[in-house]
Length: 206
Image (cartoon, rainbow, N blue to C red; front, side):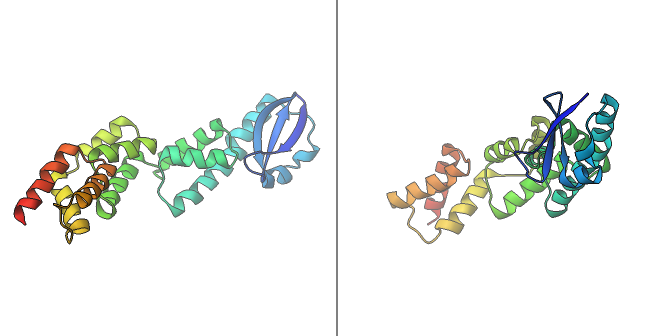
């Protein structure tokens, strides 16, 4: 098979896109491109392509993934998206992610548990909103259900705590203040009914 062209990758200028018989085949890092003297290679076999993907490209993607994870815990979807933006191909990314999962570097259950814990501590939201956010992070339904079902979470108590903390010095009988309270709490995913009950309870105590 003939290598017909090698071009700068559109997603990452430090990667090279290799075209074989006028069709895209794979992307190679700039470092590997020069290290392997790829500029001198005119033809390549299926076996050589497979070797490059499963060894050279895989190792480069894995190394980049570990760098990302050393700074911040990521979900599988988040890590995959970052590697795609770096110019790696999906099949190479899958190899790297599978390897990192087997090594314990990547675990969506731990990610979801940590995410929920930090959300509750720093920016409390409803279970409904937490579920929505985890889905957007690429966490599967089974893991979300497992993590949220283990969560001891009284939303009525949480709503009251948020109202007292953020609006404690305001008059909740003032329609303008009430609208702001409702808007704030609904934005965090709490139900209208729960908000009504909690606000009524606080009003009665004053």
